[in-house]
Length: 309
Image (cartoon, rainbow, N blue to C red; front, side, top):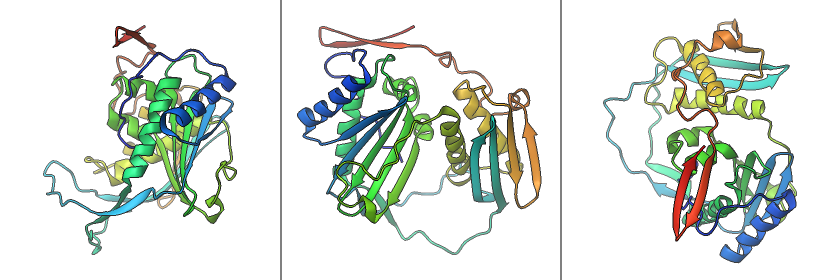
């Protein structure tokens, strides 16, 4: 899960509009000066990459606190065995395999793998620097890819998020749970990562909005089936289309021609135009703040003021 946002309000001064080179230098120097962190940054198109190598453990095992059953939570009726999404030729395309859920004899052994205290501290320091340097809407970046890598064991965690989503979350204009669903999270391990101080193993690229949305839709659909308190109970196809429709609505994304789904097991294919898709979604009502408001942050006499435009 994406760690909780801490210390999001800038501490000193509002970020100024910076050139790409200035933004990289300011971020790297601030990490070094404030937290003695060596990071590598790169701006590719509109995507700001941050690479933070470390030789300390990122994850620890811990005992899981027992939780009583939630009487309000509905039991899942379906298992999502497979889902793949891609955006090509102006179309969102999804293949999936869903089966009725069968009870399993597997039991939770009460052990979980969680972020280490060091990892949480490192992450929060990086986010503080990001907040102090990149909240200005004129910042020359639209996406952030934050990669933290244990170069001793060859394990990395990566977060990709839309910078405007972060701006809203940092001033509580976007609930944390919703922001968490909008972040693409990846965890990888590879011996090629060992000793990589400069992030040479990374394939730096510019994140494209429809590709980002496709991956987010896949994650949201997985969440709906596996973690939601309200998993699909009857028509799982509608739940999938609702999720796709809501995601395009949240971002006001209209630059597509069709949504195509393929139920592999039942050999059922469906095609939706943007107009047809607009009638789906659990959140059909437009959000009051979804019309692209700018949030200006000003500082005077040690006080922070947020103004919307």
